[in-house]
Image (cartoon, rainbow, N blue to C red; front, side, top):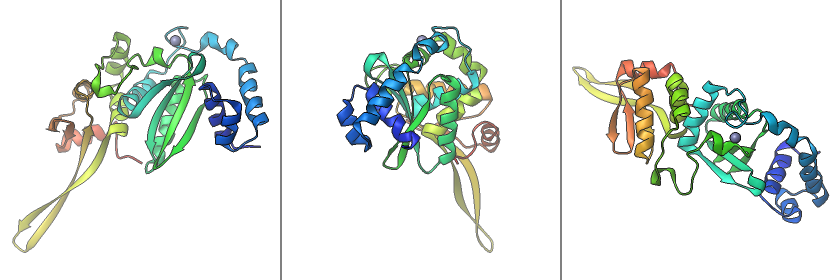
Amino acid sequence: MYPRETVELAKLLSGFGALDRENAEICGVSISSVRHWRRGSRRSGQGRREVARCPRCHARDLDESAYGYLLGLYLGDGHITKGRRDVYALSIKCCDAWPGLRDQTRIALSAVMPTSRVFSVARPGCTEIKSTSKHWPCLFPQHGPGRKHQRKIELEPWQEEIVSKHPGDFARGLFHSDGCRLINRVRRPVKNGDRFYEYPRYLFVNMSADIHRLCGEALDRLGVAWRFSKPTTISVARREAVARLDEFVGPKY
Ligand SMILES: [Zn+2]
């Protein structure tokens, strides 16, 4: 028995057109295992499940709250790549310092695309959480060539609707990927020495003006005051604004 992650990696590589021999070498397994998994996943009724696979093509219900979160993650740290037979892999990069966020990403991916299994690939310092489907571009039409900050990022009306219904989930996805909640420490001199005050603040750092706009709109909908502290950085620092955002985001974990 090989670990599930090895099997998933081998299937992913097969999906991306790797030869069985190369695939076996990369995964450290026998060629016959790779062949078996490749044929097995083709035989396992993918054609039948196709019917209800996509909320856009097949009118399957979409978990909108999970989608709002996943859209935030995707716009921050996600990317979509095309493999063999028009199968796309959606991949969210998760820092190993925050195992809780890795779990949240897995949960969101399987809630949004329940017919696809979620698996992970270890990278230096981080883990890519992945799911493959022919329909990821239907759910993330922002997919396109080039870096996100070098192209226009605009939501489609159906996405706008979800984001305006679930601004907290969307903001949580954005802050969990490209943001942080940190503690500022300031020194105030008083009569008998210095006193230190600590206060939390949120930062969201991204290169895309379009993604800043989407983040700002979500914060406006939540009634959270924000400003640019740098051209690339949205800052939430007022006490009541931080408290309000804590209801939806909170520290990374
Ligand atoms: Zn579709």
